[in-house]
Length: 133
Image (cartoon, rainbow, N blue to C red; front, side, top):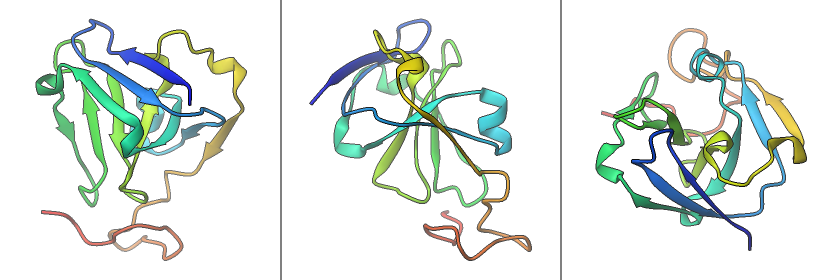
């Protein structure tokens, strides 16, 4: 199993993933579009935070089930726990050392219409639908 090390920009948060990276994704939701991250999906068992866990504030919105982690020092988005697959993380591959994002196919995924709460919620989206409190 390949191992990749990664960090935020300032190096305060460090992590490792043990995973084959065979696909990258982008999304068109407001958050993904504005942070412009390129992500790979890994099982939670594949992610190990090595340092700086106390520097990872969490941003939540909509159902509050997806947990978006950023470095509190440099502001870089590092990874997020996925709402529709809560046992997986989306990893920002631009934080990985010695990984060439051009070596893996990129798939654009829908995010803008993925809300599961409110009047425009669509039934085909997976994952919990109630707001986590």
